[in-house]
Length: 120
Image (spheres, rainbow, N blue to C red):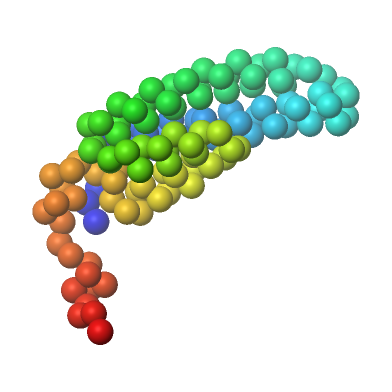
């Protein structure tokens, strides 16, 4: 499988940042609403996660156009920003399927053993 492109790495980094800020916001909400000890986590991570979410959406749309993902992959990646930590699953899926590489590299990549295996 070809190496990730620079845009693929950018998407992966932003996906991890979005997930990290989601986790921080969840901890902040636990501290605010369950233990009722502090609102600082929600105050800080609410702002950070809001920015990370907007950044993730923008980077996803940009990378989807440049790496020619098509509408299905783009919508799945965008939908992954809603449930907590799901951007990590989207990043893993896109990396595993080779969609974080340049389109030209995907087309010229050698077929895998599974692709060469005859169908019965």
